[in-house]
Length: 231
Image: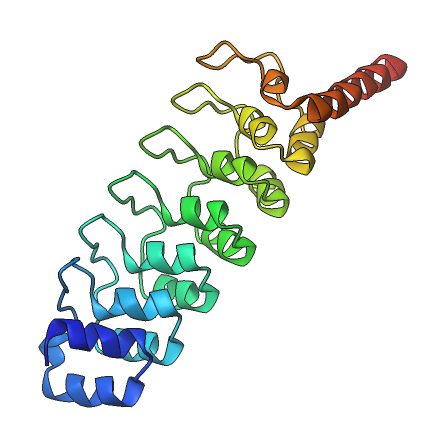
């Protein structure tokens, strides 16, 4: 059986056939296909937990990365496979592993709005302020896509609200640019700085279309009035 066929068994969830094969060829558990992915990568991608369990019981290496630097945990996190993420973490997978783009599993869980995975990775020690090759953090990715629950959770767990990416965009810049009203309002409420300019010399609110800019300016005015009233 070719390595491609073995990986197909894992991806298709054919646990019994794979178990029989590994009984005869236990040293093939970490064989890689043409993309340098192992059966564990493929099982996690599809979310077939019995296969994931079988592979782990047969000493599948959770640290192996494919040709783009993706570990099985990257793939499980990106696909939102929370139970697979749990199993990988229980077997020593690194929450800090970076792929060739410099991204961690938390980057992908955040960008895909997989809140349960975000919570699990963070509880396991994933660094919430880690940057990728574009200096983007997980909150940059979540804010740009309007993932409010993820943004709130990351902020509650130490994410820096005014962190800048390689273009000097803060999460607020990206939320405004993406017309993500709820996220932009949440960031304002949490004290995001509206006076930071990006590489294009644009302020966050200047990145918003007119209708959203009006809403956000009104929110800023309300916050200023509340502050003055308290003083």
